[in-house]
Image (cartoon, rainbow, N blue to C red; front, side, top):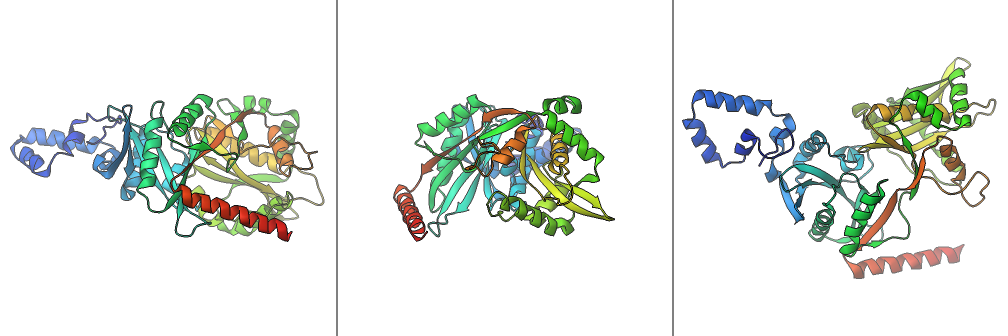
Length: 420
C-alpha cells in the first residue's frame, strides 16, 4: 500500500492506489460524481513523493522483530529518498544518489525500513566496490551506519544486508562501517553484527576518534567555546585582506588542486585525486548538503585562492571533510581560521546539530612519528568533545577466496619490503 503524508498506511486514496485496476475502474464507474471529485482532490493533495512511492517498488529482504527491510528499485530511488526525508529519516549523504553524482562512490543500493504499522522509519545504502585483489569480484560496504537505523531494527538490518550479499554475484565480503557518536546505538548495531558472524576489524578505514562541536548555540556562544588563540586568529583574519567565498566556479579548480597537493606534501603524503568538477557542481545544486569554502587574498591588485575547506552534511550532523592552504612567504596571516568559522556557521544554519571535525590522532606538533599531529592540534583549538565514533566490522561471504586474497596481500607486502 501507499504511505500517507505522515508516513503511515491509512491514507484512503493511497490505499486504493494499490487495488487491482479492474476493481478501481468498477468503483470509479459506480461511485457518485461528488465522491469521485473528493477522491481526485484527495489524491492531488498528497505530496509528490507520496503519490509516487509505491510498495511494489520494494523487494523485501528481511523481517524481524516487527521491522521489514526492503530493497528499493533503482528507477524510483529518488522518490524513496524524498519519502525518507519527509518522514524525518536522517539518511547520511553517502546513502543518497547524490553521493554517486558527486563522484564519491561507484553506486549503491538503497534499503528502507518500515515498522509493524507500515511507517517508514529508517534506511541505509549498501555500496558496491570492485575488489582490487580479485578481478571480477566485489566488496559490499555500508558507510556511516548509525543514526538512520531505529532502535530494535538492527537484527532486521543486518539480516537484510546478508540477504542482499548472498543474492549479489561474486561478493567477497561485507564491511559495515559503524559511525555514530551515540555509544548505545553503536553497541546495539555491533551486537547485531556479532550475532550473525561479523568480526571487528583491527583498524577502521576512515578514523576512529574525532572532535564533536555542539552547533545548537549562537555565534557568541560558539566563539566562546573556542580556544583563545582561535578566537584571536579569527578576529585577525577579519582585519586582513582576506575574504571567504563559496566556490561554485570551475575556474578555481587548478588552484584547488595545487593547494591540495601542497597541503598533503607537508605531511609527506600524496594527495588523493578529487573529482573537483563534480564536487563543485554538487555544491551548486545541493547547497544544503555540500559546500566548499574558499579563502581569497587580495594582494597588489589581484585576488587569489590561498585556502579552502570542504564540509558535507549527513543526517543530523556535518563533517569537516577536507581542506588545504598555501604558505605565504612574505606575511603571517591565519588562512584556515576564517574558512573553518564559515563552515561551522553553515553547518549550523543548514540544520546540523553537531559538527564532526573529521578525525584526530593522539599526537601533538612535537610528535615525530605522527604526520597528522599538527592538523589534529589545529582542530583542537576549536574545542569540542573528544570521542570514539567508529568501528568497522566484516563478514566473509566467500571465506576461501577471501583467505586467498589475504595471503596474496601478505606475499606482496613481503616482496615490497624485501625490495626496499
